[in-house]
Length: 323
Length: 259
Image 1 (cartoon, rainbow over the protein chains, first blue to last red):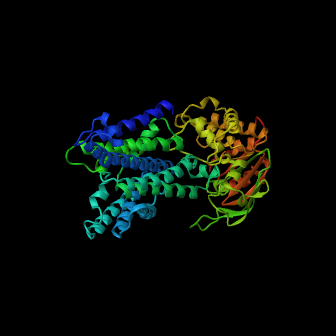
Image 2: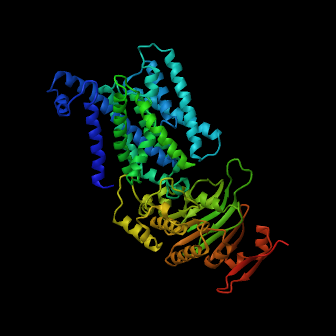
Image 3: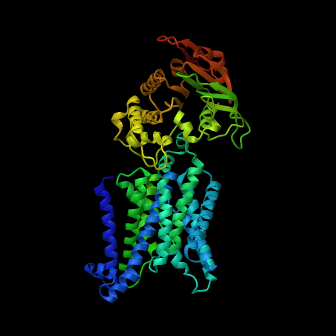
């Protein structure tokens, strides 16, 4: 991809981010954003930008980066254009892990690890269900298994939170529909850490994903230990998705849509594809969050609802081409 | 050179051995063809080379070294495998596809260098696909795709090629083109192990044939040794005559009617 196109992707993200900071119940003039960020402008605007909008936009970007990269790696590894953490049940499992941990009083940097444990449990469960359904290798079977595991996870969240102290944990809707509205800088710092590590490892594994995308036998012929490599990618992609879930709840379909948009730029090799998916993912989630705020003010649509509204038609279009 | 010595393979949940004490070697600088009916174990030979199945017994060696002692990349730098089929869910450019043949030579952060570029360019020229470089692999015809896959295998830079039914989906002209390409490669010093259903073609191009049936080696030798009508009839359960090819005298089987 040409440097011009990379800059275009970056500029679109910056543009959407500026818009998302400016637009809201209290509008912030674009010319005043920089003053507000530095704290030299109007005190009310400074508060709105620094405490509300900026963390929200940064958190939305990071969630998009994590989900986009996770989706790109999973699609390549599974050779499945419909693979993504939400539809595979990975995110649902992560949410159960995070909710359980939170109900037990765990918080902070450990929360993503609890989500990760839940995510891995969900992956294993999805593979067990898919195995029971037979037809190994049919991309639709594992997906169906993932949706079943995801539905189970949603039910589990309801059950756990029905018995929890109302003020100690976030509510079920927050987890199931996703939100970046309550983002705080410490949460952002934690997610950033996980994304730097997880994203870095995925980029390192990029060439292995290129080879895995050829299929198991061809990859084995190129000297790759296929089973180990697949497991490695799954672990890291699940960790990334789990960290986003711990920070923002379930935001579906981003991991599905984003890699396809990135591939539309002609990208096929997974290293550049992962970088582009990070940029596109950030842009998409920031836009979706903005859309959720402006569609029916003063009410806010949950982030996961907006991404689903965009993602489901897209999913259907991809599914049609697969059959 | 690849050598199987008394290799026995059994798949999980199967009651019969897919390979039963199979021994074979590939003489260097020649085409060795493994032939046999469906389910005779031909593809299992390839699968055990790429370690998708583990032998219960026997040894597989590559140039005298035990396969199990070689790392994946060490194996792939010596032996290139073209499996039976390969469908790319996300089609790539031909140039990027052939470049994947250098994967066994690259470390995680090690970018492809001049040596790799040369190997890729040479492989594409040898396989006659240099002009296809900017195409996407899903736009290729069957014959082009097969030659591109060969180019990827050649880019690995080893001296042994293993091909599992490389001409299954090709028409007779493209089929001949692939075999003549293999013949050229062998003349340039490659060793080829070929799994094929095409007995007549194999008999013309291979210098060494191995006939498998139900996991066992039934015959092993020159095409004239292996292409014996009575042996082939027993293995394929069909009346067969073996004639001499009127052009080059190679043994050629002709199928008779069943009654």
